Image (cartoon, rainbow, N blue to C red; front, side, top):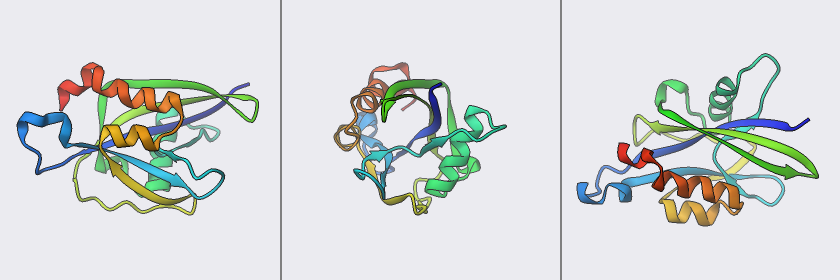
Length: 149
């Protein structure tokens, strides 16, 4: 049976960017783990018994980044599933896309993470070293969701 995890890809809009460069005013939140290879990832975690996937994503975001559901706006229609092996076992990670309502909201890390960064798409892809996460981030630029920005 595959391990299942859920999370949110969170972005914020920079207030100072010129309107003509809409995609240049988007930054994505990545957290650096305090364990293992210290990889960078959006907030995510394993589904607890009795939780549905979206509840897990919201709980993990609250626990790992200190962000409550009320501080975020979920982007309607965005949901991505990633499948990859971890320690020889299949893993499924489901991500939703969410925008920060307030650009200045403080990030409060748990002990699971040692750092966070807000990154432009190109930099976020460099920090997220796993190919499937890079592809998911790059798809945001090419999907219809960029029209929201």
